[in-house]
Image (cartoon, rainbow, N blue to C red):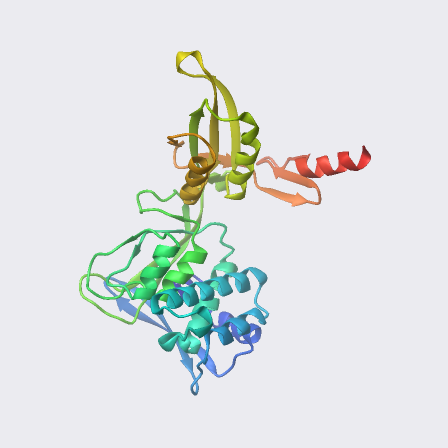
Length: 350
């Protein structure tokens, strides 16, 4: 359904098939697409049609095939990560070492084409950030439950008593998605194209369809990049100040966008420090855990900064050597040397 939605949104199925055949060195298969009626709309349905029996005796044969492929580096790495996610889930569910895992239903060529095809499709779209609603599991397979639990994917279960999220789908979502949000909480964007991917399992209640929206944020249309951020903050008055540099480094390693300290006066006139962390919505658990583990605080405040439909605007930027360059909407640019690069140059001359 992910693959079908990409094709409906404009990814050329023939070009995608040829690219995968060359990159994976796998022949005797084809992507077969058709448009079907799904509820009140039409949607694309896709199948991987193999000539002969194309199966793998071990998931590690699939892994080696991807690792030795000519797929783009980012696609290859994420494909391996998705496959490893499936292997680890099956290992935990069946209580066997990863080296002894057998995929059973997932050992066909469909699995490898689903994984690499979806990731290559999003790569070709040039997606900078991917959002997803929480996954509707229906009645999931044990491996699916293991994946959403291990990867901390937001889920719900409503509708028919059928499997609505497969292990492969959950593994792909775990490596694709940057943030999860309900429809109401998703960032505003200008719709550029859209696609509907149909499944093959019809059930009553609602169409068996996955929706894909492709667009750009409104800040980007004005020359800026826009996203949503969160601020965690806590007041501390009982910690050795020599520990703060270590705490800041740990927060940056966990994905913090920025960390800063502010001197404050707390109750009873005690001097203290307010620790503030700027972070992406998907990193909340990691950052909160580090603050509680590595500092003396007993509480953390969360502040969602919402200005219109974004909470932060930033300049498009690129790194060139030791310089970082920001591009302003009027075509001008600002250039600065990265701190660590400047420090290395300084230390070399002293």
